[in-house]
Image (cartoon, helix red, strand yellow):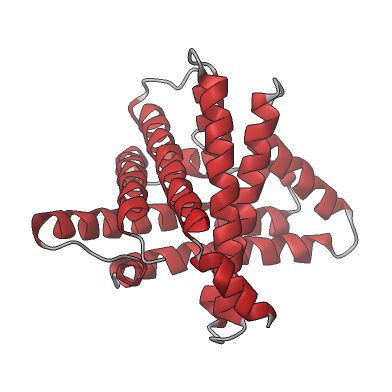
Length: 265
């Protein structure tokens, strides 16, 4: 009976409209993150703004009328979080799709945390995801057995990144959409491939840094998404790679906007 009630809630028209708004919100954030990453790669600078969701929200807040937009984005993120948590539950229990269910639910938790950052910023506070991550990592490293938890978290993030890359390359995201016909459909699929792979690369980088921090017991190695993107510049042709990832994040944002229109709910 409870699963039936969850299904009925997911099928309700208001909730589906809220979920579509959430996908659009996610698109806005990723487009901004992509442009911030491109600013880092090209040396144009980002005004001290991190290339991550908190940085994107802070950039919006600094614009005229930005606080009003922040509250609208927070509402969309909350709706998206609820949708993903419910979707994850339905994938886990009736369907038994453990990997997809866990990752979907984890994404719901992440977007809930981003919504929390948005509320902090809208209320005039400051949200620094990199500093928060380092403080949590330092706490884990100082706690008996904490390095194993940190390493596990890093491996989970790395695994999610690989999941995104595989989902993009195999075009599994098509299951989430009613792909339109013709040139529009081909464009949406191309955006999905580039976007999923690029976001996966960013997450893999983030996970690797967390695992390194656990091995070296150095919390300064841990960083948020902004630091993970900046770390790409240390690789051979890293500036080019970061530029590609930045463009890919923009593509993922546009794909999310397309998903708001054609999502299979």
